[in-house]
Length: 160
Image (tube, rainbow, N blue to C red; front, side):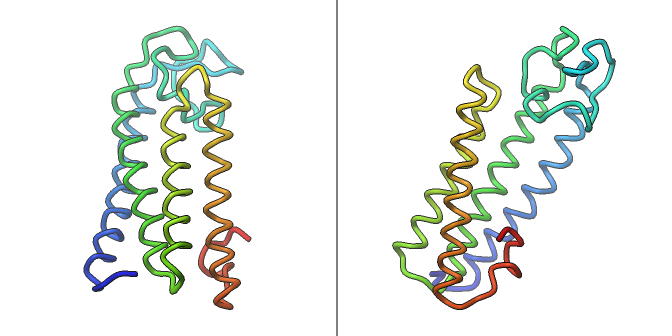
């Protein structure tokens, strides 16, 4: 799909940069999260074992305080989007398949990423379900492409 190796390299760099940015801003958001979880509402810090990503994106923390980590979590979400979209596009661009199959992979992966952005809304469960559904469809696309090309999907994705 790539006309030259340089355009694929751009998506690799974006995915790596986005991953690093996500981890950095996730850690900053967690550091600024005032505390509280469903199990321990009065706790005073973020817990990687009791809190969720959605907690960092909420306006108020589980202990009722204003979530000072939210702006950092929004930046982390931006980096996560860059990472996921770049990965879907890069993956599609490296398959020796038809444009139709590659476009379906890009679209299903992109919809999965898009719906994940709305998990901090009142329709949390719906958007999680839609994000997972489209993510699974994208993984199915990869699996189908690799089965068709007799490649080992386990090596490339570790998902099937």
